[in-house]
Amino acid sequence: MADASVTDRIKQRFPEARADEFRGQSRIVVPAANLEEALTLAHGELGFDLLVDITCVDYLHFREARNRYGLVYLLVNTTTNDRLTLRVMLDEPQLTVPSAVPLWEGANWMEREVWDMFGIRFDGHPDLRRILLPEEFESHPLRKDYPLQGRGERHNFPVIARGEA
Amino acid sequence: MAVELPDNVVVTKLDELASWCRKNSLWPMPFATACCGIELMATGASRHDLARFGAEVFRFSPRQCDLMIVAGRVVMKMLPVLQRIWQQMHEPKWCISMGACASTGGVFDTYCVVQGIDRFMPVDMYVPGCPPRPEQLIQAIIDLQDKIQSEGTIDGAEFDLFERQQPKRALVELPILGQSPVFPRAPSCQRL
Image (tube, rainbow over all chains, first blue to last red; front, side):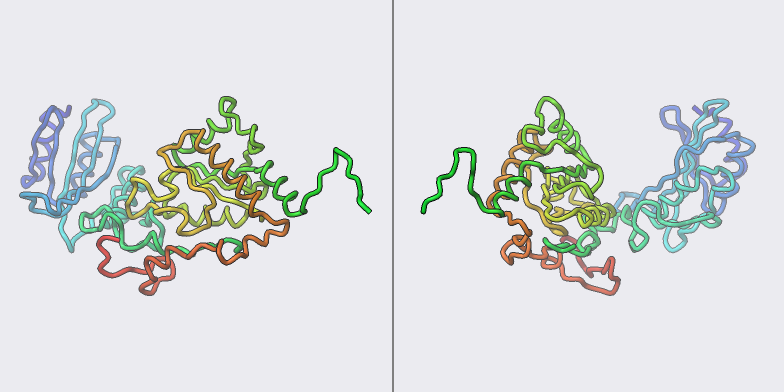
């Protein structure tokens, strides 16, 4: 678990950040404007050298949610075994955040996946293409307003009849 | 003048002879994408022994096979691959859709899973089950052998028969709307 000094130092730097702790895990929500600085602080001074995951939550239909998307960075300090959950809330139309690839090389494919599934853009990403879905796909299917069964994408392939080719 | 046939001579039609040869030497192409593939392997292994039915030679090259066994769910992105492999197989060829997912999409009724490969390519036998037992797959192969024996012709003319052509289901159910040739959009299509 991250000791209180980690969240304290982030809060010191960004007074608007909200921090709390649940079962020994530190969580902190930083304003979107401070994301790049906060990541740089975590990577540099605080020593969170491992980016475990970048993922996203769509809070559409979520009770008491004030923002639509929550972008989540899961960080680990491999020296002290501290873990930190860094979160930033996003709303349409401002769905662009700075890329974390300059800090953690491993952010490359994670950011591509978040772009693919949620449509959040990462500014400064070297190659922001879809990673799982076909290039021609137009939607971001993990958004809650995307129908579970799709918009007919799976129905529109050529049909091969018997005796053809 | 009647000709006496010796006991060791059988008279048959060339079509039936060809079908008899084909049905007893099916070469399966395992297109195993999920847990059905494990049952498919068990079917080929010693306990269930597909070799008893002449279909034990699994080849991973479509050029050497005449029976496609689609075992497991097929996602949208995999379907062009499946179709390509099917087209690379030589005539005469047959297809077994093994398991609920390959036949109907199974429990995966989501945007990315094809709801039955028979919407996009011909299927001769459907095997129900999730996954089917090896006995069920063997039964499907036996039934397919009967089908080959009863319908097959030496030049594959049965594939041109109108009644054996499947309707183009995908296009019948959902006409192509929109512009993009690959993913035309179906407007206001909340539940398909």
